[in-house]
Amino acid sequence: MLKTDEFFKILDARAPIELSYKCIANGEYDNSGLLIKCADIVERVAFSLDLSVKSVEFASRKKCDLMVTHHPAIYHAVKSLSTDDPATAPVISAIKRGISVISMHLNLDVAKEGIDFYLSKALGAGEFKILDALDGGGYGREFFTEGSLSEFVRNAGKELKTDKILFYGKGKDPVGKVASFCGGGYSFAEKAVAGGITDAHTIVTSDVPHHVVKEMCDAGKNLVVIPHYAAEEYGFGKFFEAIKGDIKDGAELFYFRDDRLA
Image (cartoon, rainbow, N blue to C red; front, top):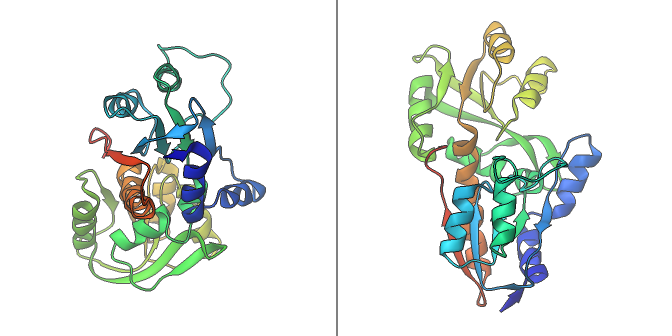
């Protein structure tokens, strides 16, 4: 039987919360850590990329007393809580059911074997360069891969289990050097291209607004836009498997995948 702080230490060994603090010190925003505490004993744990009404219901069915999410259960400060508000209803639901929540966000993005790392592996990276290095990990991976753009997108969709990938460029063109950025990393991708941090021919990220699409096309880049959920759920699943291996006894682990968002 584990206590909540003991389970947190197991998570922290693979994605240290200190990485989140360093990202914040560099000007980024985050809210990771133990965000909801309802009980001190951990016997059953549900992992879910997001805290949602559906994921909390899943955790409740599994009789979990703790959830681990990637995206922060409480991201920005809130002035009120309502079951009618999709942003706060999951928080109320977790508390009513006595489920604590730990969120591992930027620290898991940039960990040595974190979500950004695993996205590059899903895209076919062998050796890679970290574009913004941090304590053995970091953000943004640059690597080279063979094949055409259409083949690259098709293979990525199979590996990430999504059919919602968009791409801008000619399908027959070679992929060449790739720069990938997990999650909503389009702003970093934009700066990396404009600032000469990467000369990659193919840029991969999520949540890209139109002006960035236009800028990438004007710069002669291939742009691959993966759904945010699919791009990060892959690595979060790998993190879950790693934590399962770290748990010798005392807690049973479950995984929730929201196919609506993939």
